[in-house]
Length: 454
Image 1 (cartoon, rainbow, N blue to C red):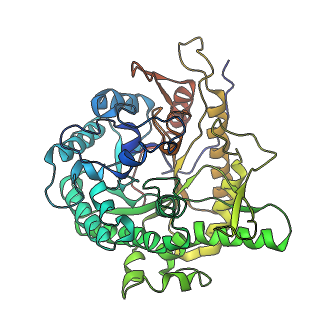
Image 2: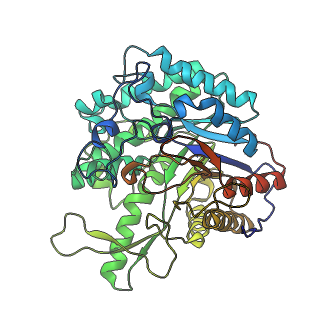
């Protein structure tokens, strides 16, 4: 039996949506001229992905796009944020355009609009073309130029119908986890030598925003993974470690995009890679600031001699998702309130551009739908946290549930299900879950349309 979760009424204009990454849902990694990306290579490395799987098929969205758009239409969520696959459009990252790749996103955009769903497009979500990685990837400043060219190509084709854009998703994730720790593609373990990659990802955000504006985009924002950093104790060493983690993970992208600077304590690391005009390029006017939220992090001082001076430790006293993420919706409220107070006039309207949880299926209910009460509880509690922040004066304009479909998910592979829709991994049959019906009822009860954030 599904237990209803009451949802407060949100302000007029508040947008409900869903979100999906091209690499995690599309599959078809070798079809219609698509080039290889860094995750195609990295996921084949032994031990890189929890279950040893790849995204070669994923949810096979590439071949089920009509069915998936119909699911979006039935859901009633007025907005859908998807990403464009860079190697599907430019197989080697720059140069000759693969028209079949652009055609796919052209058809997807038209289908969404015909279904009454507003498309919101993200240009980069982790799938760097492998050819560019072979030339240094995000450590190489030339990759920023290639990204600007790619942004212009996509905007020229889709900009007449898509009004809302995110240039670069999660620059901190792509930088630190891909190039410092090696737990994401391309799997480099550079420690503090990661700084050029982080800077170039943020510079790509700025260059992409400029290209989108030049193509007529009216709403350009960001979508960045953020998390409160909670010290493990009152010990000054743990508090200092948490502050350092907060600066690196949260303040670096925030201050670069909103204030055109890096945190003063970290600026010495960045000085050698900043060229004249870079920080002004990164600090482009944003129509919304998107926060991707999953859980807070508990941080302690690392043992003496460790490569990184802080470590992530388990967050006790909280329920956990099926991939071990702590469930702490109050942390989202905390982050929204504190961050808005810290940046004040520099902060544009906020949007929760991604929020969801991995819960594996619990059975089939009376309506032949997958019963996923924990996902309903999770989303409901986080929507309440957003509402509480709004009541405290924080200007939050939308919430995107992660994700529409069960899919492959980065280093977790298929070990956790995040979707509102169950996807059978053998047959690829789609079955809406109880959370899908619940979210549809939440949206219907709000009676909102999806005007672009402005």
